[in-house]
Length: 303
Image (tube, rainbow, N blue to C red; front, side, top):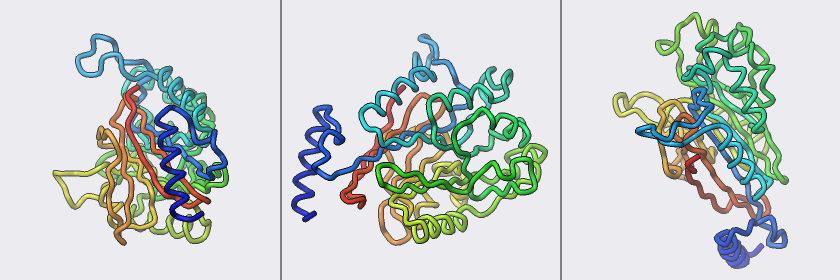
């Protein structure tokens, strides 16, 4: 497609989306839309906050999130639903059910993949493993080596999804556990350097697997003012290349829209995180012409 044709068609499609008309209604335009929906640090918050809550009145709740996700899926079938960790710990639901309810509800909402946060170890590696039969989605972590634990074989370093011919490669990264999590909880789990791991994953997904989009599901944290040497999502973006989107967690950072960072070769990387407790749902839309990414936009939606 000539450049001027693409500009004209993109302008028309943008106008139509502004009127609530999805791109899928205009296949002749040859523009594909990929929608990434994501959460992080939900921490077992199943119910919405009460109406009289001083900070988050009447916000959140799994039922509302599920309804919102379904409405977006009706708008565009090319959706991936992801979580960046700390699914567990925060309400009596976890204390009583040990994570079973969280995984069952995520499965009902048809999550595609999740990475593992530090609080997901709060019942030990045995606790995570015990709840995995209740999950229909993939667990992805590339820098946690579980080979000497009961989790061996149940966590993948990456997963590739095909959405209308668009190959999406997703890999996960977790925060260093030593000093943060009781050693008894993570057992013989080995933490590997996230930057080196990310470079290996990108080489596989971009060079070998020929993915059109590469997403990192990160539980490293957005940034750390108190310790600027600590690895975080913004540093990961700057030290690597070929990652299109970093979906973050751990620091409970509320972003209205993704941060646009520069990678090691000066190209743009989207970095997003949507706070905590299921209050927000992140949405990133990628647009493609002949499977080549031409634009992207994102926002945080209050649930």
